Length: 127
Length: 170
Image (cartoon, rainbow over all chains, first blue to last red; front, side, top):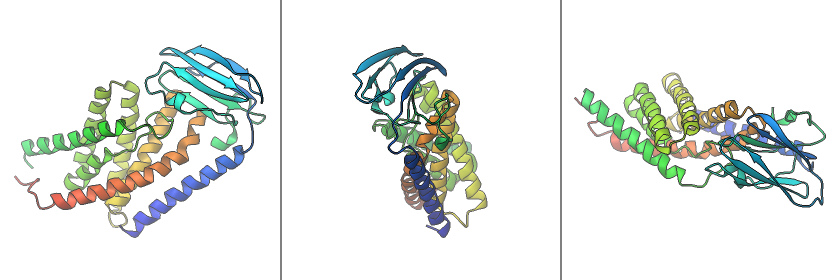
């Protein structure tokens, strides 16, 4: 190990931790009000999110097959997907603005938006 | 190095990289980001760089990501690992050639691991065109640091053992 190595490692960890804190602080406690579903970059579905709402399933057609998402109690998650790795299903529930579930193979994106940055763009934090 | 010896060494390093990436792909994904992996296969590239030089490192990376992509049968995976591997190898070569005094093999490997993950995220962004992907950037960088350290120490250990062997002899 040379001094340069240690400096590099410390720098990387600090940069990552700082941006993580920034992102989580900006989104803390806020709940999204809308889930937007896009397939191949085109919006195909909009579902309002609200606390206490009953569970509902929606199915959209992706590039490889169907993707089923569940909306419940102000949260949204992917429950079934035609993709191979099921990473999108593994994400679990999301509810804060700016969070999203991205299924690359099936080209399906679920995005939660809130009061800020609701107009189709992700909020400023992640940019 | 004669041609035969060179090809043999190259083939060995590429197979090491392929086996490592196959082992790695059996682990559950750490993050819900396409292409997010530990990056253990980078050991082969780092060994190549320090034992045989930049050209060998580039050849190992290119062959490994193309063959690996074909083995997994995923075009997206090939695109992601090829772009990440190529740029990270170029960064490592740059540091190795110009900042050899500042960084040891460990630092070079950490830089390579971080670059690999960042470029892979950028490549994934080109496919999805969705800024929310960058939400995962800090996690990808944080994961890259320990793997980079591990790869660096492992490569250094291997290089120490290989040093006495007549790998480059005629």
